[in-house]
Amino acid sequence: MSTERPGVLDGALHPAENNRLFGHTEAEHFLAQGYRSGKGHHAILIEGPEGIGKATLAFRFANHILSHPEPELAPAELADPDPSSIVSRQITAGASHNLLHLTRPVDEKTRRVKGAITVDEVRRAGKFFSQTSGTGNWRIVIIDPADDLNRNAANAILKILEEPPKRSLFLVLTHAPGKLLPTIRSRCLPLKLKPLPDEALRMALGHLGFEDSTNDAVISAAGGSVSEALKLINYGGLDIKAAFENIVTGEGTGRRSEMHKLADVLSGKDSETIYDFFVEIAGNHVIGAARQAALCGDIIRAERLARLSSSLTEKLTIAEAYNLDRKQSILSLLEELKVATA
Image (cartoon, rainbow, N blue to C red; front, side):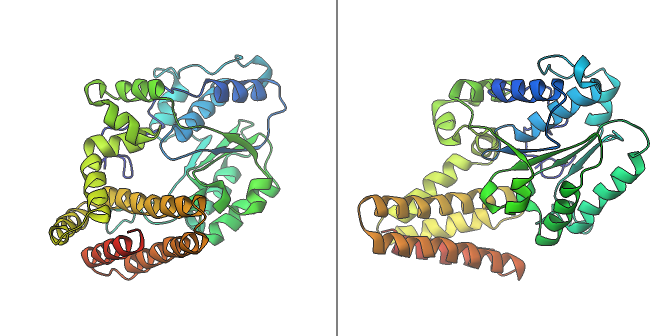
């Protein structure tokens, strides 16, 4: 991951710095028209899979509003932010007094991104509104993503959403809206984004300088997500996927050696990104097997695999919480998957 921006993948741009967006023209039009009408909602829930441009869209819309603070005078469409403008420079530097980006904080000791957005982070929003309440400007909070709010933080956000300050806007991002508190969802206007079409994904990767790496294998495996494509290109994701599939579907004693090789890679130094990538692959594999069993009418097997999915997630969460040996956790997971999905 980027050392300058913790949590940003190698080869990616932080959404605040990215002045281009691909594949979401309709969503941009919807936001621009809603704002210009003067009847826009105070909280917008931007939904969609990870890595398709939700945060980039949020920063892009925030730039539009802060550049055109009077709705009736705003352009009818969003434009690429002007890097030379004061608003853009402040947003890019994280120095805008009218925009607050709430995301998982960095642990000062380990320099790693923490596992959740805490209530202390949400309290920054209260301070943000109190400090800017007399300026008359728009005040925009981007929650990125709201999926990472812990219970106390979610309840604190809900209180603000219930009584929003004047000229305030919440852009609430989510990869999995079903995991959010229903009361948060009910107070937001939903805006659903779809995975990027292949051509838009190629253009987004080209914008990042990856024209030569956007082969069909990457585009097919990325599922319309720029972040997934970057993991495949820069983090050995294609090799990890191939090794995983070979292990859980193959036979023979040699598979044990392959399991150890994969576990060594995933438990090595600075392996957080590829480990999370692997966990996602494993989870999707079990869910896919459960779905296939259900379609074939094997309800007992489908239920067993569904329980396995929950069990694996719980075991991995406990292993991380108690700092258990990651390699052994991975080996145990692979063993369970081989038996359950054979």
